[in-house]
Image (cartoon, rainbow, N blue to C red):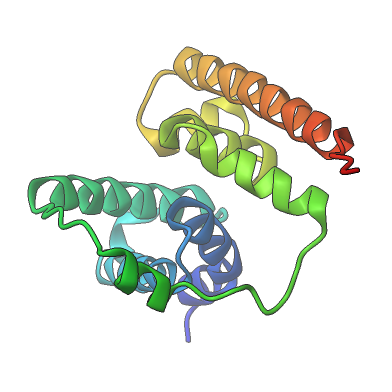
Length: 172
C-alpha cells in the first residue's frame, strides 16, 4: 500500500466523527464516510501529497453532504406518522449519558447546520478559520461570523438548560 493510501486510511476516525456530527445517524454517517473514501481513492491523483489529506478529505465529504441534502430536498416526501406507528418505533434509551454531555449534544444539534459545520471544524477538528473556510467553500469572514453566532446560540441554550435543571417542582 502506498503512502497516499496509508495517509487517507489514517483519517478515517476523523471522517467518521465529523460525519456523525453532521448527520446524527450512525449508519448514514458511515455511508457518507464510505462514499467520501470511494471518491477520494478514485481521484487520488488530485491530492497533492506531502501533507495531511485531512482538508482534502473533509472538503470531499462536505461536498457530498451538501449534494445529499439537496437531493433530499428535491425528493422529499412528507408523510405524517400515526401516533400508533410513532409509539411502536420509539423506545426508551438503554444507556444514559451524563446530563451535561446530553445537554451539550442537544444544544449543538439545535444550531443551524451551516453554523454547526463551521463550529465543528474549528472547535472539534482544530482547523483554522481559513482552513475551515476552504473546506466549506466560503469566505473566512463568513466562517468567523457563523462560529460567533453558533457560540452565542450554544451559550444561550446551555444557560437555559442549567436553569431548567435547578427548577424543582414541589408537590404537597
